[in-house]
Image (cartoon, rainbow, N blue to C red; front, side, top):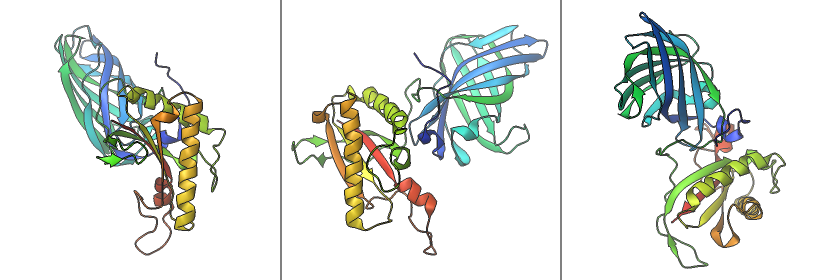
Length: 303
């Protein structure tokens, strides 16, 4: 069962422009042309794969029946935000929802505003439509959002944009061929103190969440590849060793907590060789934001 109001993890602060949303349920009560509504959505960061519930509380106007509602999830609507945002940025903003429910089919248009006012600039917009179970009705709802941090898992199938291209990557120990299925990134700062390879006490929150993710995809029977990465501070040789030690520490924790077995795990250290952001700015100055992104542990389930 999903539990709401969990403590957000560091990965939930990771910013992205790639998002998806599904309308889980909505209820509208009409009095003339006015109405009051409550909507519940599943909001997904498509770069991290994390998902949390989002409530919309407010009112609106429409031509609905005295009561209109949808009770099952719609297909995901994909959208790009006008700037990089995280789950915290979606909390307390204005959202507008256009709804058409036809008993076994529902159509929704969702517009997020970049602020708590209906006149704030548009942050992103998307449409969702498909089969669902709904009471007939039509109208528009609007209100203020509340992010309800949960177990981080999407309620349905959604395309995640962090696939790592490891096709035909050979494991030298087993000589078996694997191809990457999907990846999960954990910022190193959530797991380790600076220049350390022993897990922080608070790392358990991020690792439990990553472990649940492994179990979600592990039923394919594939290997779990854990890869450590660093930024460019320090010598390449030192960073290669540090990244490998950190990957091993994560692997050992998963094995000890029985999220996978030692036979399931492939551990790799890439050091500073695979940055996902520049470590320096074009003028040669330090780029702390880029280095933060590069300090990470990537987990991939291989099939």
